[in-house]
Amino acid sequence: LNTITYGAAISACGHGPSWQHALGLYSEFAFSYPEPKGMFLGNVINACRMASSWVFACILLERELSRWSSFDKLDIGMPYQVPQQALRKSGLSICAQQHGFLAVLKAAGIRTTSIIEKARGVFQQFGGPDLTCVSRLDLMTSGLLVVALGDL
Image (cartoon, rainbow, N blue to C red; front, top):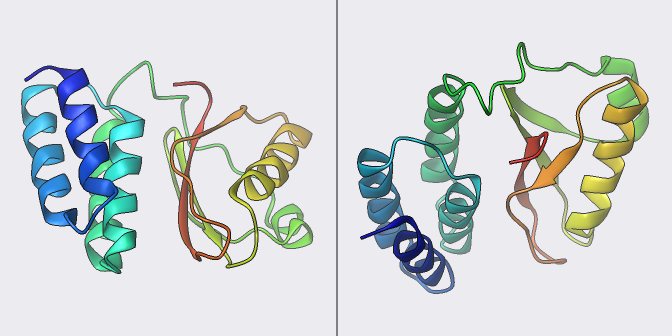
């Protein structure tokens, strides 16, 4: 299998009740291709989300964020920190931040693009990197939204 095949299979599993298959394929992919792919991680987290398997999604996210920080092209140095006061004013709930990635809590009824634009504005206001969407949540879905710091 190559990266395109893995990506298509993981994405297909994410659109159905096959989150365990998506997780297995992602693990196989990560073993065969150690260079991380943000879109694949987003698809697996989405599959877990659709099955309400947040525990697995959080464990995977934590494991991958620590593993990914060792790759130079994704490592932007120390995690960029926006002052807490600015985050409170913006209304954003930042759940986790590692080298190159951010996890933001999204409430139901709010568009993914609205969260990303708000976060982008706050980060750029303080000289931070641009943000890249690596997963999406439906309008009426609440959950953890993964965002890449910088371009992937």
